[in-house]
Length: 118
Length: 107
Image 1 (cartoon, each protein chain N blue to C red):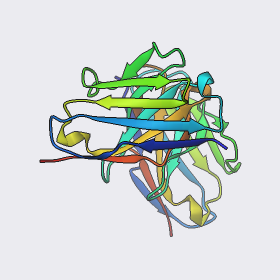
Image 2: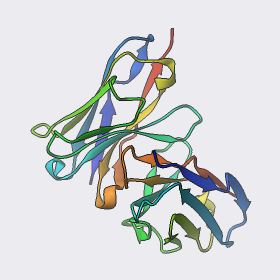
Image 3: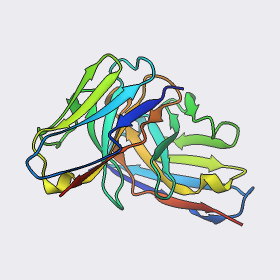
């Protein structure tokens, strides 16, 4: 059974940093691209970033470019999202997801809440 | 950036009825269009990928189709558990984008 478990969320002040982690199990981690998707309270889904298996090809939403960095450790089946210079509008539940056929996110974690407030 | 526009924003129907949800892309996304279902307090669940392929374990009352840049998700006979928000997503071009969602309520 595929499992994705996010951690690292919390309460931070504007301008601070946070690193999210996602542990994958139950599948061959090294065979799949992985994504981060977020959801602000009461709002819709917003794609954040995708990283391919090679740990080189990385893609970001415009709001994330220059502030967020996605990475993965294939030896540990771990996905990360380093978030710097956080703003109030980054407040959201952050989900990690495994990308399958046609780029669809076919498995999701339970999400981790990031709250940015002074 | 490719914009996905979903309609209707919300709809309320009775069990057994049929519903069609629409997702219109601002430019071609080929068939790289995915549908998700999200219930309150839960992570999204993959329903349809590649515009019309059902994901593993998804009942056959869910179907997807494409006509140019217009995509539809059809639920042929509504069940009470289909009450949820439905999102489309394109992965044809970066950045990937989601539609704003369609809320389906089962009376």
